[in-house]
Length: 263
Image 1 (cartoon, one colour):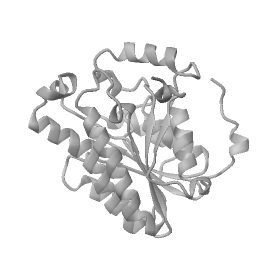
Image 2: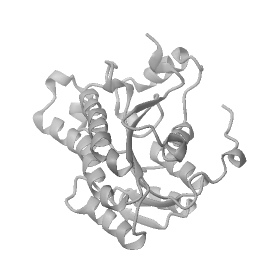
Image 3: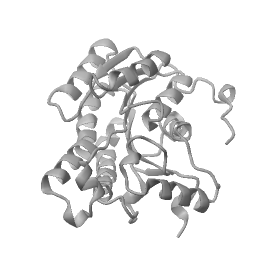
Image 4: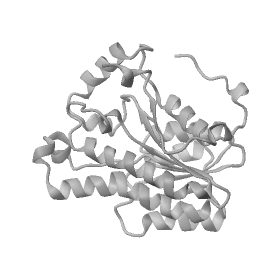
């Protein structure tokens, strides 16, 4: 896969303040986005889940020169709020906030939707969807000059993908939330998008049953004939955060080599 011409892209995000939630390791989609944001000139705030995750994320934050590095488990009361309090104190504003967080209990994720537990569904919805709404609420007062909010979705939100199970309805709710937030925040020049990558080898995806089969089929069926990588997703999110996309909002943007157009 050819690499982007960084000299041509220049410093499209120079001086922008970008928060990235959800980096787990160097294979994370969120890391690919943060890496492109930084390459294009943005200042970064990066979060890590907990002390167990910190050793995997801290070297990446240091590599990217993140000026803010803080813990954030959205399921723990007050942690997301503390992230935004720190940003408000140190930066005084925010231009970009990217949410790349999803979770469902293993039994609910790997079992049939019809067998999912009420508690498992609640947890998946809270962490994977409602935390994005909470993020938007906290970001709004900091985006005084407008901004861009983005969440990570998947094709299983719109079509049935075997073995995606519980996460299909959860991601569908997330995409709907994106549209409503775009409507509610548009008057403040805050644009909101869902980004829907094709199958990627991430830690989160490894929890899906028969994921290797899904990857193989995606490579064969995608018109481009290749899987996308985390930098491809990063470049798309960076575009959405620039003035080049100033009239786009409320969209689900597919980054999948054309896979989603195939029957």
